[in-house]
Image (tube, rainbow, N blue to C red; front, side, top):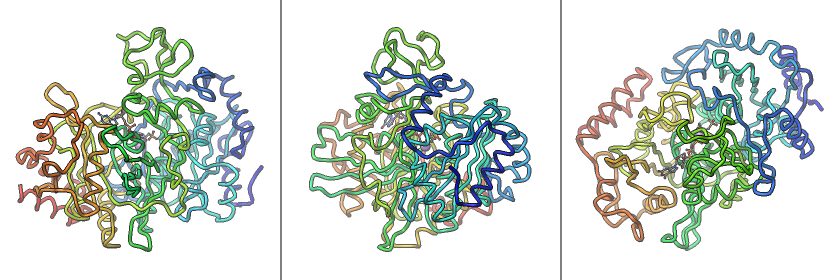
Length: 581
Ligand code: GTP
Ligand code: SPV
Ligand code: MN
């Protein structure tokens, strides 16, 4: 196979001359092709077959122990000027970056096959979808891209029709973190990634294309590319509202996107459109419409159990790739939270006999890759070319203190301020310290392809496009008491908070004014059948003025860090709230 697209044919040729693969395989997406890839990866040890009775078509991949999460310090935005990338991104001059990667790609695919993967981000016939081609020497990447994107022949056909595609070049290299780079050249529509096989570093359609490169173009073209889940909540009368929510990595998007209504919320239904990325456009009707560019979930395994996320447990029993989970003696995947006790005879994620004193059985950032069609709450509207209409945008993060369970912004401009001031404890999704609160505006700190302050200005501009835009909220499922126990039960019970949010969008739902925004009045949240005492509830909804004063001062300093680029409107919001406090 090859292609009628001259630019693609030339690029593939050029990459082959540089990387010197033994052969070139154009990925068509067929089942025969998948079977052959699986045969080869089982033979090489890249995949381990799981118990075919309990987990048919499912495999375990153990990564290199130094390659288990995104490496933000090795991720660069390569724009001509440093200012364009902004100080929250790592920047490298394009020439320097090309020179670095060129030497690393040189001969990197010797004794390997080079796979050419045409893919579409979004429904194949959506006007909002975008094509890309990832060239990789990792069979694990090919098998993951099969689940995460619409790829193969239909994608190549769209590329040949339209002519346009984003280029992504990936090689495992030698997996040495000293020779690992994830480079983005937004002006060249090019991504270069070398030295890592891990999800966000290596599945280039996801964070690299659908967030970093796409956010750059979204600003030019007047739309939003966001780190957001998309979920529909259907009430007992059969009416559905869709909401989009941005939480930082490993802070609850997958779980909220597929939550199961608790028994007390009878009659409500949940429809999952996406769990990680939303592309949003203002439609002709003035509403915001969102598509999920992805076709699968690359989800966090630990914490996923019958009590917390039964939909996920159910969808992971076939055709799933697990990465860095533990293995039971009868060949089943296991991770902390799947069951209370670790089963006897467990093998840990590194392949060693598990002993409880010796770290976790599954890596804290172990993941599953699965087609979204296997989710019991999968929404067929995920395939709508125009997307689904969004009623509310929700920001959130892991905040053990201060930040209430939920509050609503006064208007779009205040909502953008709320998004820009998101902070959250770091998680195992990126390398480095875990549990340190850091600013993560719109949950996009690691994913914005240009200057973060210009991104805020773009968000503010979007507010002028229509008077029917979504209302903007902030939630926090992660408040802790003095014993470091979560004060809010979370998971399915989060539906109670979503219902208040939807009530507010419909113009009812009790709310009281506070300096930081609108908070539910007593009785406005449905607490029926909920096991949280009223003192705790009161604390979860309280606004601690002294604490918020210092929070607002910190946010002010953070905003000032972006110099002239920081929109005046955000500084004005900061001053307004400080005065009110
Ligand atoms: P990325 O894929 O990294 O972008 O993460 P995500 O935002 O989709 O996070 P995910 O839903 O996978 O959740 C990460 C961790 O948070 C898991 O261990 C969950 O069990 C846990 N979690 C999710 N929702 C809640 C909640 O409401 N309360 C509590 N306490 N934990 C939660
Ligand atoms: C995240 O870290 O936000 C993820 C996983 O969704 S990765 O694709 O690795 O970025
Ligand atoms: Mn994510």
